[in-house]
Amino acid sequence: MRDVPWWKRGVIYQVAVPSFKDSDGDGYGDLRGLLGKLDYLNDGTPRSLGVDAVWLTPVFDSPWVDFGYDVRDYYTIHPRLGDFQVFDDFLRACHRRGMKVILDMVLNHTSEEHPWFEESRSSRCSHKRDWYVWRDGRAPGKPPNRWRAVVEGSAWEWDQKTGQYYYHAFLPQQPDLNWRNPEVREEMFRVCRFWLDRGVDGFRLDLINYLYEDEELRDNPRKPGLRPYDWQAHLYDRSRPESLEVVRELRRLLDGYPERMMMGEVYTDRPEDAVTLLGNGSDALHLSFYLDFAHRLWRARQFRRSVRWLESRIPPDAWPCYYLSNHDLVRHYTRLGRFGDAEARARVAAAMLLTLRGTPILYYGEELGMPQSRIPRRHIRDPIGKKFWPLPVGRDGARTPMHWSAGRNAGFTDGEPWLPVHPSFSRRNVAALDEDPRSLLWWYRRLIWLRRRHPALQVGGYRELKEVPREVFAYLRESEEEAVAVFLNFSSRAVDFPIPGELLYESPAWTVLLSTHRREGEGPGRQRRMGLAPDEALLLLAE
Ligand code: NOJ
Ligand code: MG
Image (cartoon, rainbow, N blue to C red; front, side, top):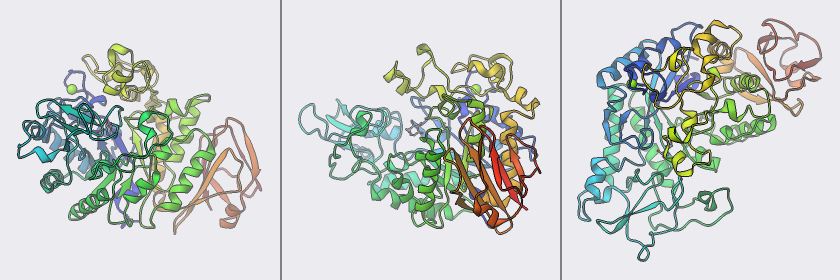
């Protein structure tokens, strides 16, 4: 167990820094605020969540058009979030607690306000012209090709001054860097080295499969899809083989430091792309985001299949990684809770996330059951929310302030919060849930600490249990020392079925390790049948 790296054993907690805790009353969460809340994340005892790592959304200087994903200076902390002194304090404090710190690293693009881009757009002969992707139009008024931006519209933006188009996979304010230019490559590696030398434990790599575009700018074939972006099969504008080469080089860089890790946001509708960037399982990404899992509906079959696919596809040395919520998705409390008992499902979902084989990533507030917010138009901050209003596709609803208490602004800020606090905070807040051992927060704590104590849950193998009713997702986690069986009832009805043969073969007697409905240490003993309560999550340990 000790040889297993932390990023396989541990639980990662994603903090949207501006939404977590404000320390100076400007309405934005900041590093000092976060630093003051580390006991909540991990104080070394089961009274805290007990997470092993925090992933911070971008903390670099930025005009903040896209929540910091538009970087203006990779070598400066955004003044709203803090400075190097507080960053170093934070890093040290995390390390003292045995927690790792993962930075969000945006390699694909910069802000249009980055001095590199300002230089690049200044003239066609600028020495930085080739740092970004500039091309002539096909004809007057016609962009170089039909590629679209993820946020819709052409991916090409006309630049009046120099009479060419520049490419942006995301917003026009986020011009793509030209990774074919060795100077760019060198500079971005220098950025990564700078932060590794400062002591960070790794990176979450934004849009890592978008670094390269086809050199000949070939148009994508058409295909059916929900929105215009999906009407193209993205063969030529993403997931190009060159991305893997860069990831491999990054891996060599990280391997030169002890215990570093990088996890890649592979944004795609083809889960194969996420697997590709795992390389041979030990020479590319350590962890690859599996969006497919986060897109499943609340059906046992959906998750069972999604896990089965990943388990059968990733290279033997690679390690799965799962999450249900993040700053881009509708919070899963709301998404998966529709047409059912959201609170009960949140427990089952947490049990799944924290007992599957793979590294779980939690999103701040999910442990409180923070729901998705409806943001009134005047409060919308996300450019996607503004652009598509009244379509509810903006992401602000998943980024509202953390609920610390029932006090003013949920204890998040003394000032005006940058996004409105969700009204549920009066009941659903850390102070209140902490008092109630039956709360969702305690359920997360229990699961995480249980995971820490059980090697089968942390590093054990995964075997799906097939002889169970359709509404149940069940699996075995086995290590050399022990076996844990997990039963998740996705329905709001009680189910009753013969104990799966595999379980009896494994051991004649099992006891309750944890359940949403029964006491620890209980049977089901030697009975031949199993009953699950509606929305029950049940973990059994082989005797
Ligand atoms: C993916 C990030 O998760 C998202 O929040 C951001 O807007 C885009 N990348 C662009 O950087
Ligand atoms: Mg602040």
